[in-house]
Amino acid sequence: MPITDPAFSLGIEEEYLIVDPVTRELVADPPAGLLEACERILGSQVGPEFLRCQIEIGTPVCATIQDARRELGRLRSTIAQEARAHGCRIVAASTHPLSSWQPQKTSNKERYQQLRTDIGLPAERLLICALHIHVGIDDSDLRIDLMNQMRYFLPHLLALTTSSPFWEGRLTHLKSYRLSVFNELPRTGIPETFSGYRDYENHLAVLTDTGMIEDGTKLWWDIRLSARFPTLETRICDLPTRMEDSLTIAALCASLMRRLWRLKRQNARWRTYKTILLNENRWIAARYGMERGLIDFGRQERIPFADLMEEMIELVREDAQALGCLAEVENARDIIRRQPSADHQLRTYNAAVSAGASHHEALQAVVDWLIDETVVGVPMEAVAPA
Image (cartoon, rainbow, N blue to C red; front, side, top):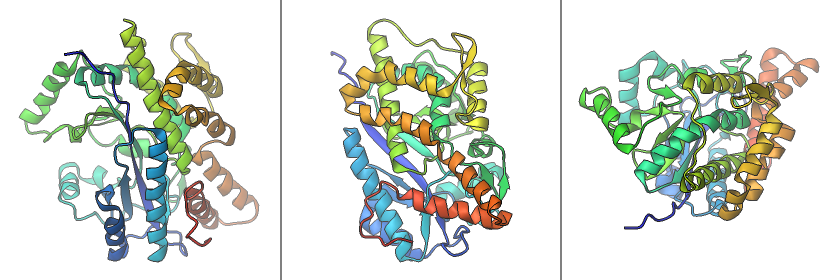
């Protein structure tokens, strides 16, 4: 049977924080009607997250980036409007600038209750949100091969999305503190390489047969084979505050995977580097975002991030054109120009302090910025300004 070309379809998952527009704190116990209203409109594309102050959305399978834009816009818009109708707001960021994890309440979903039992305090501290990108690839061995090669690009994607510089009202001096919180869980980080799908299955079986995990959904790597769909799921990213930036990451993921697939067809591949080196770039991206560049292991030197991004855009140009998402890929330049959410949050905080605000008031100003920025580019005509 001939092998068909991968679909490179897209699915996007985002997790939002629910906040009080007056106190700017998280709403630990949101109105019951909020999730019910969202589920009535969106069905299975919305659901609870680990903590009740969070809400998760997921697009259906999208054949093109244009489909993904329409679906993600509809989902963000609906959640934002329903939150407003119930006296709340939503924030797209990976941590909340002010609120602590301790007053938050776990969702009643059985899976989340079991997670809390199995992992303990690290699970209770999971007051973090993320962006997950699914790219449709039917062939299991190809998914493994692409996962092995995509490991190299994960820090680049993280640097474009950092949105968690604060934790419990403190400056963390990291652009992605979310990664530090998530690292406390088992089976996280950049995965090892596997020789093929059978090799992956054999290693997964060791964990399932010994009762450590039920299935592959408990592998929380930065990139993984989805246990539910025939997709390769990129999970390293912070949640971008702007919807357009999420679409750029989706376009980059699909284009990079198509580029690596084309290399495979030419009996070539992207060089696989040791995890110790990849983790160094992962740390640089989490600590500094784009500010300090990343290491080019071939040249063995640190390269400015804007230069690396230009190289990546050229690397995937043909593939982005084939997938109809070149404009979204090139939007990475705009992200670099205006900088990701974490940098904006820090600038907003510092500007407020310079203007005479207290530490707490400056953090509230950051929340206000996040509330407004979350709906930039979202079809929100029916929603009045805050």
